[in-house]
Length: 255
Length: 225
Image (tube, rainbow over all chains, first blue to last red; front, side, top):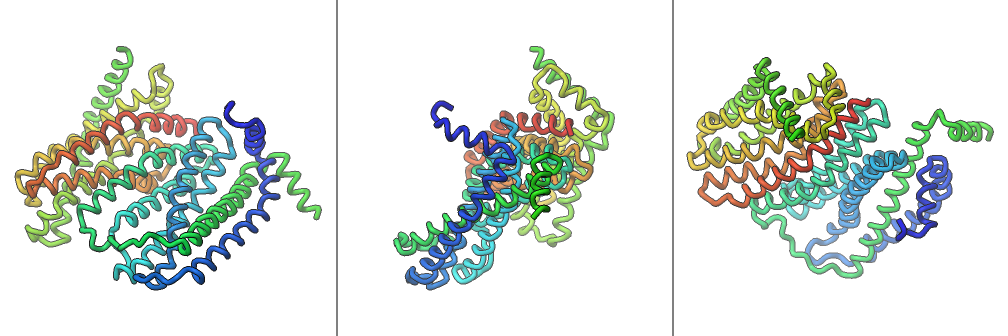
């Protein structure tokens, strides 16, 4: 802990308390939305308008501005879930449990978007909606892992217990994801030749790369917005009998 | 040595219980045989085709048979309260859980190995791949029991845990399925399979070391709810 400045530690301790988190995110939210709108508009403008047409794939390559950031997010969010799960299990911080379960549905959506856009991209490129490509397959299994987390959380009535169960599952999942990914990759190289999946990848040009990175940041901002909104609702539900939520309700009623 | 005694006592107890309820041993095996019988009926009795997909069929059926048998791992102990006693005992829960998983594998995984040669003949698998099939089953089914134990420990407190269990466990079974069925397929064409077998061994060792922990943690959580 001595490596981390005191102010940062204090900030995290305050964030672990639900009323503080609620008040802080209320102020943070407009800024996040502004950042997201700026990033997504500049990213889309750069990607769909400024970036040149690809000499091989024509304009259909432009789907990467959705597809690639979504695929990145699908893995990123699962790792966030596992870290939040570990924090929740070790330090019993309620907020970490809330972050875990609020991330699950956002992560599942990004995984789904990555799969759908991948298959839409595959139709003009590979001539078929679906190939058992290594990445598509492991993305599909990742979607099942997300659905398992969501399903388990829904199946257990006591939400504190459910959070613990989901945290254990997320940790088991994060150990398995690399194993699943590499086994699928290995399986794929044996079962089908590289004729389908091997696209000539020209080293990506800067005018194509910058919008891609902007979109990746925009998706991160969107994840924060969606996750925090869910977390706030989840907190209100869990803490509905506590004084700060009652005060909040009176405040809102008074308006 | 006391820890090993506790481990052995759990294994012995579960084996005795299983011998008193023999249907629990027979059910997964019968399921295994039945599912494999359905494939030729559904696909058509073309020897070439069946032979080509035999490793996959046998392994997918083994996966499903193991998954269906998982519920018996903790269910009766959870219902009659002996699971609480196991968790209250002074020995590390993960060791006792490992004992339960061992007994479970001996009563549900091992019988699959015994009937596998018969099914290999049903599907017309070449003789040289039979030993590899048995080896992959021997290495692979304990991994399935170990990983499945985590899932069943998470869901044992639920009334309808069955559907959710398959959603939790089957994605984690993918690597075993890939390497095991591929090893059998390679063996039938006479190719070396050392790599696949080594990977299965390493997965088994990893599962042996890592799986009992989350299983124990999940059981404690399920008992407290």
